Length: 484
Image (cartoon, rainbow, N blue to C red; front, side, top):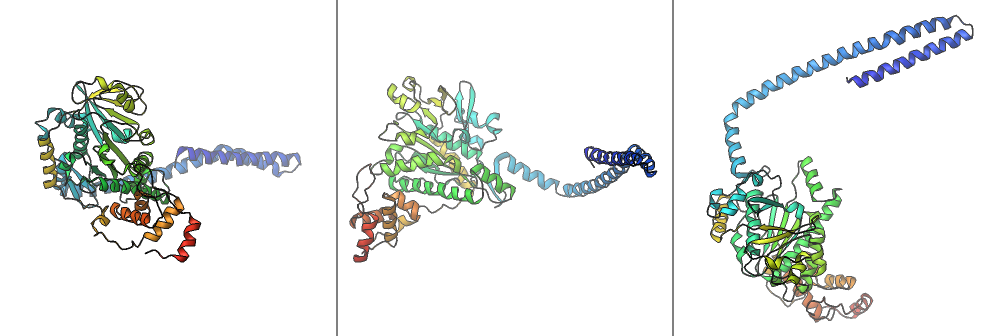
């Protein structure tokens, strides 16, 4: 028993003894003989009783501790016997897991990290991944830049969404390659997932087959819009999960899952190269998805890394850009372009390929770093090694409706879609995708059928389609007209 508890018990005993003494004097005042005896007994108790209590309780505590020590000693002996029998096996497992792999305890799958010797021909990236700073980093989603002779690690958990700008050939794609390669050497595909979009030069197609990918690299602009709409839906789904589990965000949810020994939620990193190539006829849907991802994604464990040639308003809106606090700029031709990305000039003075200016939340000035060069041959070797050494995790189904044959028949969801667009007074493929959880192609066909029925206007470029009928008018027409 703790000393504080013993003192409290003794204090109570003294109070009781004092009350007995007080009562004795009260009885003496009443000229009763019993009063004298009560005073004597009270004095004896106030002196002797606490000493007896301390001795008894301390002896009891010693006995309890002795018993516990004996039990611990026996347990240690048993553990020693078990440890002795399995020592050699444990040493072998420790070497495999610690040196070059990340173990998935639930599925008993080991993610085999690619051999660092594959980086030997690319000195800069090899120096970063082989550095103590990188190896000892607690975060599993970091990447390295050169700061003169030093290494600067960037933690995606801290930077959150990143917007990268720069003219062609200055290093944007090379930076994306560095981010991906750093993740492949550091993160477990069970806990870190990638969604890659590249409709420009298909350089990200080199990564097809790695276990971190949710789906193969997207190279079609329409599927890219569908993929981003799926991410928006995933964010909303995760928010509902957080509410049902009484947690505020992604980190608190996973902390709760670890406490309850349940499966954790994976981070998702969305990588886009180049945003301009996605616009086409989908600017409104694209912009809406980017705004929602950058506004709500971090809380849900979803991070956007987006490369762009010039961050002008006709490519990415101010609302979308406002939620991206980390900006990276390679060489840009004019001061006005530098101001668009960094809110200050400077990017126009970058001369050497790979040099960049970095600005993130909490900093008032940009910092100059250098992005390590990584060759295509190195990337291919690493990816091939991962494909051979690791089990491929199945892709999720985002575009299941895209493989359906085109049909002129009325879509089963058409009437529900009519009610939805009339209720919201807005119509877009992303709205239909999110609401009904269908693929981009099917959502587009539903929108075309809505246009044929005169429910929504035709395509209006970057503007959303107008809803041409009110809710009351639709209910009146619905009684007379059956949708075909």
